[in-house]
Length: 232
Image 1 (cartoon, rainbow, N blue to C red):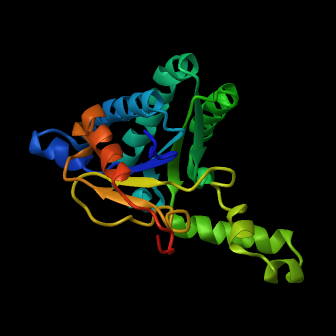
Image 2 (image 1 turned 60 degrees about the vertical axis):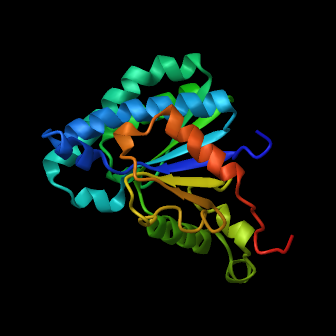
């Protein structure tokens, strides 16, 4: 517990393969994955993790078949409605980050409602990255900084100052990044923010990743020696 990560982030991968292995439609895998989200959020809150972030839908995912994209958006809407009372009861703050201009007005309205209602909750913050990519984040931050600052101020901008233009401004960088399903890449996710993040890869498919697997990842993190480029 002395080495508990403040911020755990998860690339939730393997829903489609989980469904295919059972002869089910891919969407069934995404539905099953919602239970893993609930389990990991409960474990994070119970363990004292302050931030849990989830890579739910990337900018590249818009290129998937339209039927799957529509089903994922509907699943997001349904999940927000179902989990609203539970998040409020358990003092969970809810945040969505990404290129929300690509989302429907209806989905954005539901997101705004829950974000506003939960803004003062302070047990654990659940961050959902939706329509997000690391390269997009860096580009929008650069454009925002260039439009806001004078040429002299822009030239003097340091790494800490630049971070304030990312969508994650005010949120600590992830200490631990978990990726399920055996893939060994970060898929254009939190490229700036994960510079010194510890990575944990597991072959477990996301719908099978529950509290025991989350605890195993925390235990593995506790064994790491984080030096940040220094010598100890």
